[in-house]
Image (cartoon, rainbow, N blue to C red; front, side, top):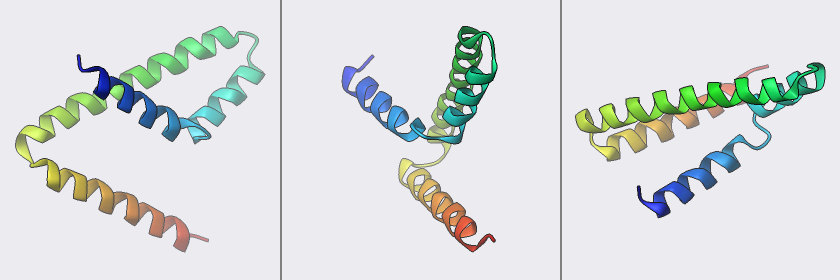
Length: 89
């Protein structure tokens, strides 16, 4: 395990998730629930599973598609989503 990769990944995901709709949803569930610990466990397991899926898919895709194309595709995808959100009424 490479410490620099671990810390940069942690920082990027942590900052991206702050104020995210998932965080807001878990805040509402914890406020509504009588068991915030259960909300923590459920949300943690969900994030773990989605992250594992992303890592497996990313590793598989990197063997088939050069990283430059993946980076460009991801960037263009984010731009497309942003444009769609701006055009939406």
